[in-house]
Image 1 (tube, rainbow, N blue to C red):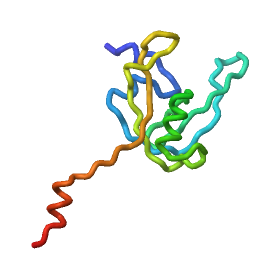
Image 2 (cartoon, rainbow, N blue to C red; image 1 turned 60 degrees about the horizontal axis):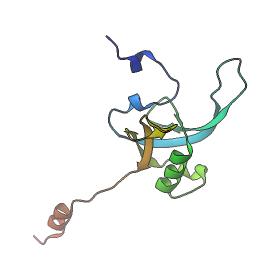
Image 3 (cartoon, rainbow, N blue to C red; image 1 turned 135 degrees about the vertical axis):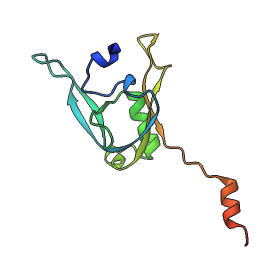
Image 4 (cartoon, rainbow, N blue to C red; image 1 turned 180 degrees about the vertical axis):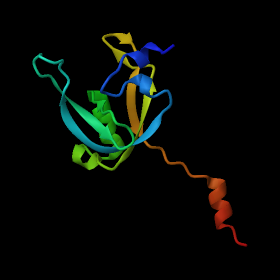
Length: 122
């Protein structure tokens, strides 16, 4: 039987979409109307990615984190940059810990041992 998260469809990314962190490439940021049909428009910003078909609605925390991860406060500069999207169980909303999506920069690690072996004389 399906889990309720599979039964409750959303046109936006949600925490259940990320059982594991994923590195995604930003293709743009746009303003979207999140109001239900026949209701007064309500606009939010959303980030689009090359690897997934649904956008991520942006809150103030993720906007600031994306700016830091991409090294720019101009969202036009984010296009083509990679970020990690992950489910953070500690996200709070309305005084309750509910979990939610967070973003962070991609961490590039180097293998010091491999690097030193590569540089070693023959």
